Length: 95
Image (cartoon, rainbow, N blue to C red; front, side, top):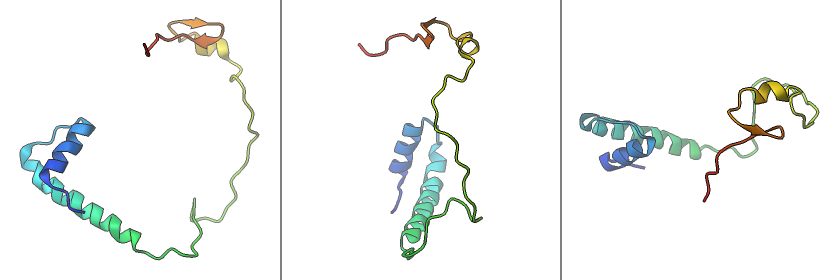
């Protein structure tokens, strides 16, 4: 996939970063190279290869899936600007 200067401009606007005009062409070439490398990874045959979370063969520790309030609700709510009935109170954002 080829990335041009217009695409770099759009990506920079979406990311809310400023990229000077002089840096857009080299950045487009770098991004094109990166995307080309990623496309090459898609061609690798991974049939029969188990997904890995770690290169070390180990079992993850399990914990009880229990819901609790952290046992310190008063300390947590002490930092809230407004709270009601043990919950944070926030301004309405949907009209």
